[in-house]
Amino acid sequence: MFTHRRIERHQLPCFLRVFNRHTDKLIGYLGNVSEEGLMLVSQLPMMVDMDFELCLKVPGPGDDVQVIDLTARCLWSHEDINPRHYDSGFRVVQASLEYQSLINALLHYFSFDPLQASA
Image (cartoon, rainbow, N blue to C red; front, top):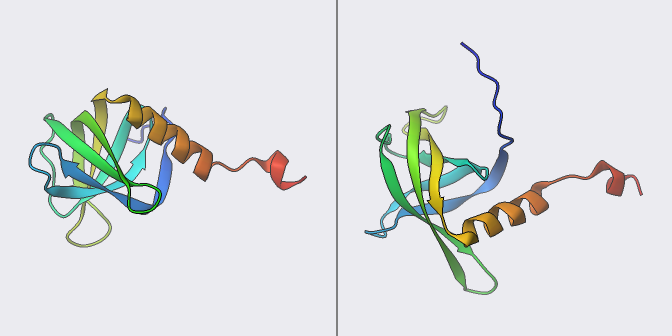
C-alpha cells in the first residue's frame, strides 16, 4: 500500500552525525529531516516503537560544534539500498529550541526560490 507523505522532507546531501545522548556513541547519520521527524541512516537496524535520546552534532564556524539534544521514537526501520546500511524513521517527541533553528537553517539553505533565480 502506497501512502502519501504529508510532511515535506528535505534531503541532506552531506550527512550530519547522530549520537546516543547518554553514551556519546555514534548511532548514524541524518538522512532527512522535518519539524516533526527525521530519518537516520545507520549500520544497524533500530528498534521500532522505542524512544531514543539523540544528540545531533552540527558543525559550526571554525572548529565549533553545536550540540542539539532531542528525544525521538522510531516508527520504522528497514535495509537501505546500500548494503549493510539501514534507514529508520523517527517522530520527534521532544526537542530543544536549537532543533527548530537547525530546521530553519536547513530549509533556507536547501530551498530554491524560482522568482529569485529569474531575476
